[in-house]
Image (cartoon, rainbow, N blue to C red):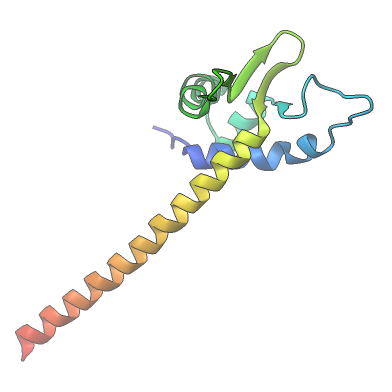
Length: 134
């Protein structure tokens, strides 16, 4: 079985691949309906992640859309991913950036906790060895 990319890896790929496109939005003669919506190529993301196109589409459309879309206090829905007949598939890029920032923070916390736990385990093993030998 091939390795399944994490949410972090997919978000990072989306961010890295489409950041320039988000920044290049022209207010004078826009090339898309809204600045926040950036068209994506699911096949490119899938190739970069090493999985089938359907796997990435499904993760973005079914999982990310459900997990990261939200409704504000006025009842307006902000979606993570949209299929539009004029622009095709697009993501809400500022939302991608926000989710990626949260995932990076979470990863950093987990890495820190792992290091602390490893040090504690090493100290415990050392103490056990000292207790047994002396």
